[in-house]
Image 1 (tube, rainbow, N blue to C red):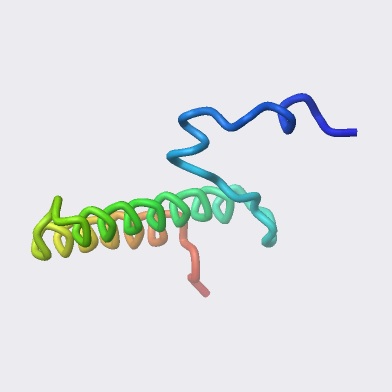
Image 2: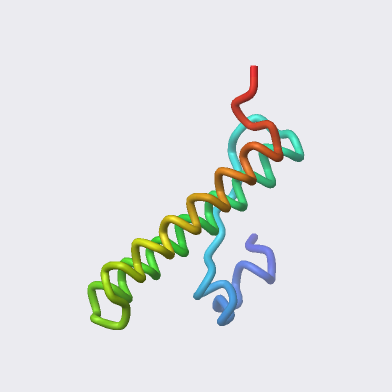
Length: 84
């Protein structure tokens, strides 16, 4: 039997910012980084679509991607993901 939340159509927030379940080794840091990584992916997708559609210049898209990467990298470092 499906949970009632699974039967309702997705709302605007879920449509614009979809989230996938986390299947990796659980830790609060890994979960937080996974959320940040999904946000990064969504932002890159929007930036690329806006550039291809002529709403952003290639330079604006590049700067947005660069900023998103720097944010993700700071998140990784702050959460100590990949540290020995």
